[in-house]
Image (cartoon, rainbow, N blue to C red; front, side, top):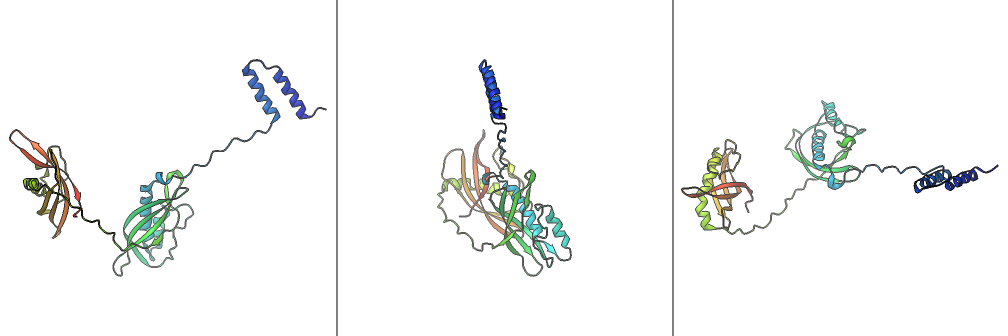
Length: 288
C-alpha cells in the first residue's frame, strides 16, 4: 500500500506533467499546495476598533453628560431617595449602581454646574472636570470640584462609568498681565468722540441702526440699560477708511452703575454732501 502522502505527491506530479499555458500551471500549483497542506492557516482576524483618540474625543458630548450627572449626583433628599437614582440611571453605564455611594441620608441641591477640561484616556474613557454649586439650606452655598469618569459606549453614546471624585476648588486667582501701553491718536479721538458717544446712546435706546455704517447689523441692547457717559475714547494710530479704538463706558442698570470697555471699529462713510465716521463693529475689550 502506498502512504496517503505519497499518493498525493503522485497525483501532484501528474497535474504538473499535464500543465500547459501559464494560467493552467497556476491552477496546478494551487492544487498542489492544497494536497501538501490540507490544513491551511486561518485568515487573520480584524483587530477590534479602538476608542476615540485624544484628538478625536467627543469633548462637547462628554461635558454635556458630565453636567447632567453631577447635577443629579449632588442632589438628594432622604424623603425621596428614589428620585436621585432615577435621574442617574439613564446616564450610567450598564451595571453601575445608581446610588453611586450615597447612604440615603440628608438633603442638598446642586445649583449651577460648570464643565471644564476633558482629559481623554484609552479605550474610549475620559475624565471631565466639573465645578458645581451646592446648597444645603443651612448657611451659604459652596462650590465643589469633581472629576467625572465617562465612557464612549455602544453606538457612540457617552455614559458615566463610575462615581465622580471630589476635588478641591482652587482659591487663588491668576495674576493679571501687566498693562500694555496703548498709543492713541489724540486728534482723531477728539474728532470722532461725539460719533462714538452718539452710537452708544442710540444703541441703548434701540436706535443703533441709525448711527451705524451701512450694512452693519448689531443686536440691540436689552431694555433697562441707560448710558451714563463715555468716560474714555482713545483711537489707535492709523490711516485709511477703517479705524479702531477703545471706549470705556458707564451704564446705568439694575439701580446701580457698571463700567465696561469696548473695542470699537469706525468706518468712513462718504455721501454727496459730506463724509462722516460711523461705527461698523464692536466687541468687548479689557480695562487694562
